[in-house]
Length: 112
Length: 113
Image: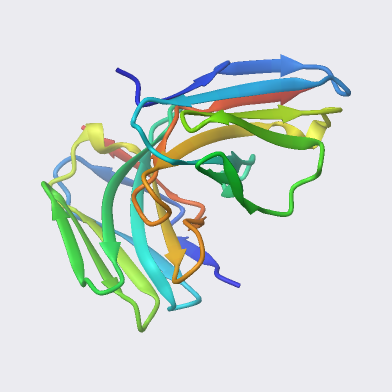
């Protein structure tokens, strides 16, 4: 069973479009995260939710809007996509804010 | 501001060698340090987590050490195998606050037969 899953795995789209990436975890964790890995392979946190409440919001353009319908899901919606948004986006989860984070397989976004 | 640096950026070794990957961080006020493995096209797998009060952790052929005062950690891989080929990432979590991991850029390891 996949612990943290993301859909889609690949996403190719045009500039200006709006897209969503979905994340689900079946580990029963209460905290979920979104990370961005750029072309230089640096992983940087974007958002974190604890029990559906936003607790970390890094300096991310407001075109990015996370939504957590329940503790097991954290979706990422991106408006007006730009070339610089091309990256791999990883979802992760943990039980509590102090424990090991478990990562999903990543969503490879390419904006043309 | 916490910065994490990993050296070397890439490493190619013959099978069977013992090797050391290095990680350094600028702010010693960390809660824990974690080593991850990333395979091409896949997510991250947690290998070892060292709490700030610990000096080392071991799992199979892997041993990670932590010297918080000097801002350094090493990942030792014994008797390397081709299956160890991957990118190894070091991440630190600062003391206090939420579970925000700061990652290094990784060391890309290739173990050839």
